[in-house]
Image (cartoon, rainbow, N blue to C red; front, side, top):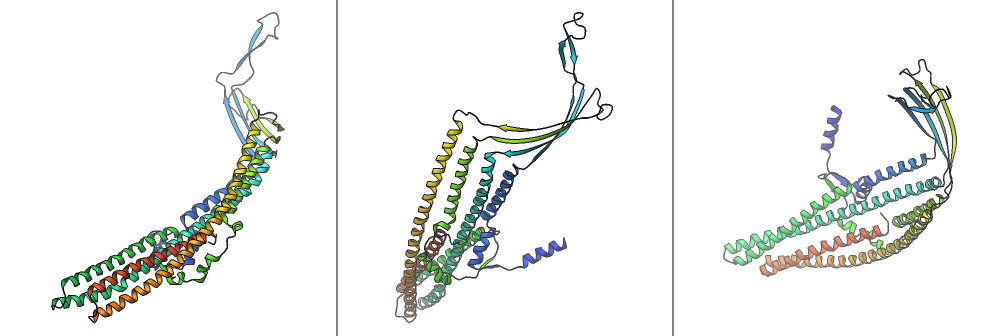
Length: 437
């Protein structure tokens, strides 16, 4: 109990979890809820493989039985005791009221075509479960990256919106004092008040977006909601990362893409299914060994006056399919058609991957151009707003000009954050399309 309390106190005393983008991606690939479920599914598949393999190993079963005939079965038999002097048939009982037995049976599959095909299918099944885990990890990385980007973008928007608030508050105080002195009208005060409230509302909106993005990030990382997270990477560093910018020029290698490998594995599984249907026309051979100890008696006294008698038998069983009225033939044809369908799906998957990669590449390039444009617009809007603020303080600009430029600056901030988010999401989709997570 003392150790548990110490560990709990230590965990409560820990500060926020610091995460870089790469650390967040690695954490999501290990402990996101989808990955945990996929790992359990892969573990279940491994046990399924062992289950199928064990069918070809010796099987031992035991059986114990106890019977008590309240009425011992009676049968009429010809009267060969006193022929010609009594009835033609007499009643006879060939059993005893009590009967007990116990035995073991050893069985062994010697040859079965379906089992041999099934052994090959188990390897493909294990590979498929591993590919499912890879896909789940890639999806978890993609979701974690988008949530990480969402937090950084929202916090950057919150910071930008807060930059102009002190200037507006200072200008509002000056205008209010000048109005009280009779040098300004109340309209000027009202304009600045409205603009200040709009800036604060935009800052609150970005803060709410950041809070929601943090919840999504915790969900993607498989962490409990409310876990304090500190993001150590900054937005500008990610946006200007040369490796991220070069993604739009990287070629796709579809042969190594997890989705194409998954489609090829489906073809393999379906081909094995076709072979399995064909193998059902082959004979199957099995062997068995059975040993029993049987006891019979007029009263319940096993092993007493009347001993147990052994019974041992072994044998082979050969099953030869001869005629199925075309049932097996049509099952084979269905399996062959299903194989053709998976081959078509594999070709379609390859073409879809190529198309999606090119589409994502184009979207990333467009998003990058739009972001650079909005980045320049934001810098220009900030410069104009700063110059107008100086003019207003010197009395060379009216309050209308100041509020107008502040409004333009707020719009530029929103557009900049929006374009930054679009660029980050486009790069995340492109990385997923190229199977680089």
